[in-house]
Amino acid sequence: MFATKHRPGADLPGEVAAAPIGLMQNLIEEGQAQGHLAPDDPERVGVVLFATQQGIAALINGNLIPAESLDGILETAVDQFIRGARPD
Image: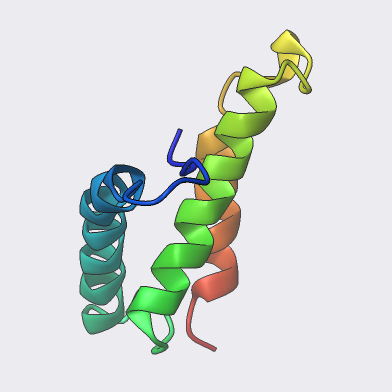
């Protein structure tokens, strides 16, 4: 969805991705401030979570995941991320 074509001036996908990545970073900062997530670089953590979601979307769009396993897959990924990012 955000893949750029290999041509000069193909900036739009990066610009389009900035909004959801920024939202993800804001949510991570909020979770860190409230003590729900371990302190870390929110931009880096957000990119990892966003990349995970983007990877799931690519697997779904490529029909690489059986249809019966799609229900709740993003929720599972976010839940696993949050459990792993909790403070000690």
